[in-house]
Length: 268
Image (cartoon, rainbow, N blue to C red):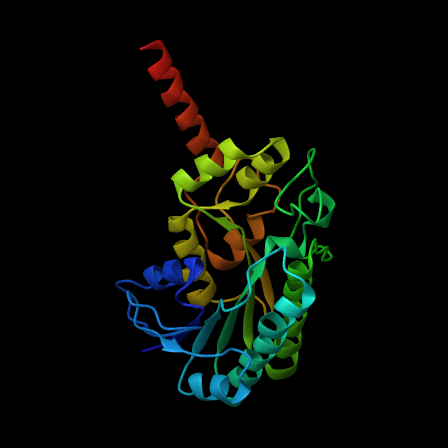
């Protein structure tokens, strides 16, 4: 049986990661920053190196989601959890002979050309070029910078220590209703970003399961984690080929269904 640890398990992506393994044989061990009433997790401070080393003892795979996820945060708010915390996870993975680290990177590691401003990083203008996983990083915020650092650290540990490493650039995880609300409340650039970066809960489970369990053609591997959006500019080809990921949802279809439904009400 494979032992899988999930850090940041009580977060939005963490809860989908848990669901990804529902009905499977892997044994999950869940860690979060603080206790939650509806989820049985072990509290851990990701910047506490000794605690992280102890936490990963006996594990085979770690899905590392713990981080400050705020793209508007200043450096002092993200450098501890997102850089020092990540180092602790990689060092603990080597110390405890783990097989694989799945690191939650982000589209913000490659989104500078498409960001309108530092005040509103979740925006996209024009028709951006396709971004492939092996293209040079282009972070749009300090948060994005920490994700670039994380991908580089994964490369180091894969090549120096032989770890299987997947840097998964996770898009914008939203339910269908949340996607509709985001697009309704945003201007054209904000809606363009949401349509391009949407990751449905179901596709989130699919891509995390694939990143954690699929045989890797190479290590380290950088992969884009978004849904099969018609308006995407992050390439999914490499993720689908390397991880066997098969996304099923499309932001355009969700929004067009909504528009069609409104039209039917207006004419009915």
